[in-house]
Length: 316
Ligand code: TUI
Image 1 (spheres, rainbow, N blue to C red):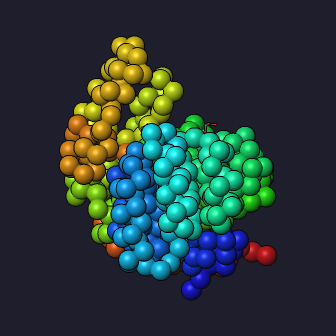
Image 2 (image 1 turned 135 degrees about the vertical axis):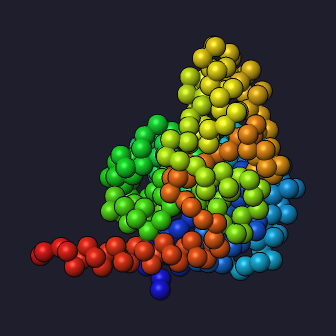
Image 3 (image 1 turned 60 degrees about the horizontal axis):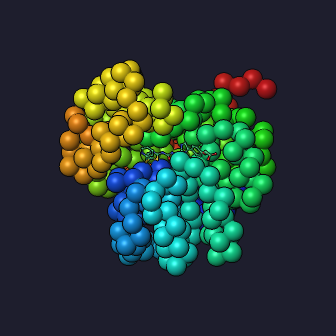
């Protein structure tokens, strides 16, 4: 089975399923597993320097000859050296997050790198198309981590109507129903983060994965709205402290000091009480940890069943 559309053609992948480029979580092991299973695996560069990410790229190249990507987090202090690294290592695809990748696009294009930015608004999607990106990821506010304000349901069709390039839906997608919904909105692919955290191959701490499994529908909360840096995390001691600091009118610098290093604390050390457990609203739908290949194949099979049922029900 293969999905034949513009996105799978562009990226040379079997299924239009892209893995989120999650800092501290999207390591070479996870990225290689997703690419080997027919999706697009993504290494999350986060705030790491180039020498750290070079090792993750080597891991992927050792494990698979299929295409993969590096996600460049544009707020990183190492963004320039990561941009040079992906060119040097001939990484086939770059996704970007948390900003406007404009100043790097020309160099990436010159080196044959496909560029796919995450966009939280229609305006940014249009701007990105104008400067020549290959596709956009329309990420709704349901997503985990650093987020925009518009829901996936409202954002995806608006961006689909505003641009000609392929649109990938992200935020709130974890199974075949989400895949079909995204395609119904006009997307040609999906990006999933939280679902892939709860996978066998993901190297995040067991406690982080279990926090996702245990999460209920109201547990993925947003902090930092008032300071202009909204981030979605699973509710814990840290989110309660950050909430209180915001209400007490602390400056964004003071709040950032408390939040800094929180993702490493949760994802690597397994401190899910005091650390930052970034996850999307769909965490509550995820009830098992399974191999990446199963996540992808179950999802595509579920999508096929949904379509068949609908076709049978549809009176023409
Ligand atoms: O980037 C993400 N998710 C992330 S990045 C991250 S690391 C971090 N941690 C704490 C604070 C800040 C960052 C954790 N999760 N998703 C993609 C994404 N990009 N969501 C929203 C955006 C975005 C926002 C504004 C993209 C572009 C943008 O442009 C603003 C502009 O410059 O026009």
